[in-house]
Length: 585
Image (cartoon, rainbow, N blue to C red; front, side):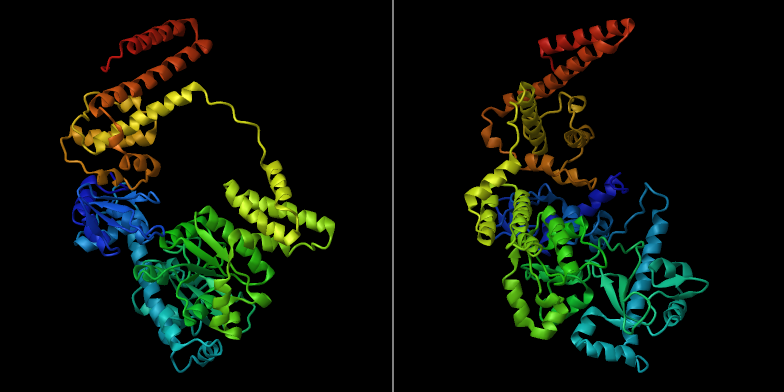
């Protein structure tokens, strides 16, 4: 089974979706030798470092180390899950996706998901039509006051909920059940069924697959209720995983026109920036930016500019957002919008050129955090200056390398007139740690074993003539990832089936570091590979036996007299195998 699917189905799916053909729809591939090469879509680069192997049906980037099969590629390029990637490829190949065999409720859940998406799609169209009806003057006057263009209204499919009942009647006329209406989040029930977004301007929310998965609704008149109301989490909508406007980012990326992404606070900001020509912006939906958001953004572009509101709350949110993005491995800059304005207000007040100037002068995230701290202290007062220095140095101390830290110490020096030499000493005092003890000899032995494991697995993966399965390593491999790779290889050998490296990704699991070492293995460094292969097999077995002997010896300290006899016998047997260096069980 592979994520609930039969192995046969997954292999047929991949056989009908040649990896070179599929990837060519997204990227420009150039053949060099047996492989194809392209600039990696998962990190910024000018020289191609991603190799696509048509014979083994996998890709691997020698730059950022991303790799996988055709399913993994679709997951990452479309920012979707395994199931969605399978559905995309199955549709492309004209194949029917079988039901999961690991869960009896999957078919029911799949049908409900389809019903919910259908309701959301029809509701979005209906709300959009409502906005242009004669009895929607209130909404029409509002969008006019916000200077929404007709292009923006069409682009975002902005709509209007006329009252609390109309959408319920419409969906009922389409044949939808009340159960599915409520499941979609469009309808709620409190003694009766009613529109969850009654009398609000409607902003449909689309996922990266361009499917409507929910709504963000804004009140257009003063009310006791919250100004904004978003869809509640359901089978297709999770606000911690969805960003408003992300569907446009995907389109830009596919047009090779996405140099950076702007993160703003709300959908009104996204619309305003789009109208000003910035299609590369997104907003979270009433929640802090999450690690999942950061991961999704990284698949699209490495460079982010944080442009949240200029007020105190917006700047605090900027710091939290920056920290999450940096943790996600993104290149981050940030701006502070003057006069405590949000992007929408600033562009309406001063125009696109003024906002572009802010973007052009966006601060490196470390500098932004230092300046944010600066606003909290009065440097004319000695005690406040000391507190600022402590805070600023703590920010710099979060960086990984000494060279990076030195760069930002110069920023602090310019703000405080404290010499860099003094700041460096303060930095050293906070980072001092006791000298590390020399590594025990066992670690060097383990490193030798790891090298042996990598060579053996790489040799088997690339079908080297000397690589055999004469000796079963299954019980001797202690690392679960390497063991799983070996078991997959041995299974195809024992069943006399053809093996492709792409099959290692069939279970949908990532084995990043392990597979990177194997896929990038340099066989040219090995002088006599046939003999070295035998030595590696013995080294793996020897490591296992030594560990076994050590465990048995330790157990003597807490065993009964009867157990002791058996343990000593086992130790003797292990020591005998070590002395003989035999390769048979």
